[in-house]
Length: 193
Image 1 (tube, rainbow, N blue to C red):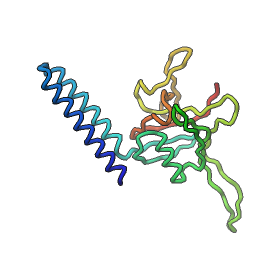
Image 2: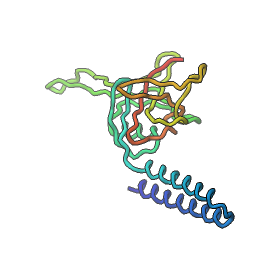
Image 3: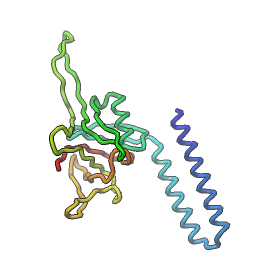
Image 4: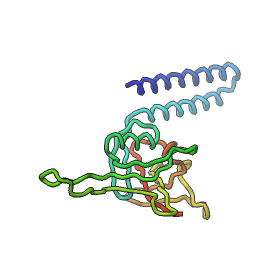
């Protein structure tokens, strides 16, 4: 509740600052075409901020295992924290670095017990890990935004992967700065270098 109120207050503050900037610009120049363009740009930015504040339904894939999630988080890192807190991820091993969070392991598993309550096994449904040498956890997403699509270092071609009937793009951003968009899917896979 407090976080939503703070976000709304922040949005109001951003709108007031933007309105002040427009007023100063309007008073300083008489070129209405550039002013109209600035207003459209500001409206788009405010619209983007508003859409980021609402509920978003996303799908998170751990390898081939899909988890449907509803979140209000703005960045994927926050959504993963929320999933872990809710038990939707049973293992989340990550380091906070100067470049953001670096994932080492994500897993969703369930302990299985017999009819008498004795532990039988742990069933792992989805797991990704960088435990093997020269591996890392790569992030792919379905957000069709060129600035978020990673390219191959050698060829310069955009890296894509078809999975579960969707086109996933290799992410240019890590989980700390990768935005969460309603309807998007995010896939974590182990890759080597």
